[in-house]
Image: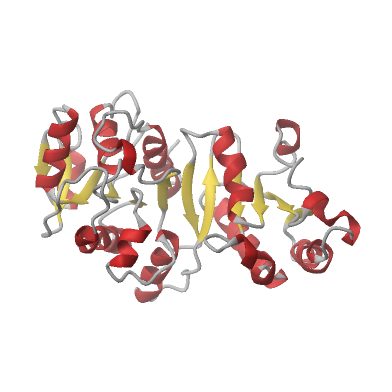
Length: 338
């Protein structure tokens, strides 16, 4: 893989989880995995301690983002945050929350200032951050807030799950299933689909994206016999999108739109709620799916898995999804990369 003139900024993620494990393992196997240069925003002493637990001989170099490109072949570049982190595998300690948040903020700041090509985030433990006073529903929403604080007009983040065989977006994300029908509106579907369409063209270089819009109810409502949302909310949204020149179809029964033959008819699917999107995404590419955020002024990707506290520091965490996230971020950030 050719590389950008800028490295990617990788966040530390939850220190008690597998983020540090997969990061160290990915760098160790960087040549075989064809990884572009990146640096990690973390406490160097913490990473050294985790590498020791895993038995990985990873040479760390405390550097600036500008020095990361040249050093990457021989060292894992680490940009210190000035905050110490305790290495407690299996435990999400709220005392580490300040460093976790600072890592995200610095990665976004570096990317928006032109020091990094894009942001790759390791998984966070939201409960731990909530206990420390974190006021955002999740990672994705926080990134939107950081873009807003920076004065960008692009601060409405949209989660996209990207795998080798499927691109899928949940229109509603981290809310209880019971709240989905009331939250789902034609306006929300249209707004989300427009962001998806724009970034499929801009980031993924799909010239005329075809969008498949899932129904909310079984059989897409069965003509109103199984709920009215498909006819009263989703159909008008699809009609508005088509009137605006976007190639959208739906609402489609969600139980038949993700098999191989059906996927040939669209470039990206829009699901109505979290699990309706993530179940097919993870079924088709459990180890290789990537979480990419659209609707922001910078590229952001993330592995499509959680912190997996139970297996932290045990040497069994696979770096496949993080590696895929790093590769995808490089391509999305630079249209000349292939």
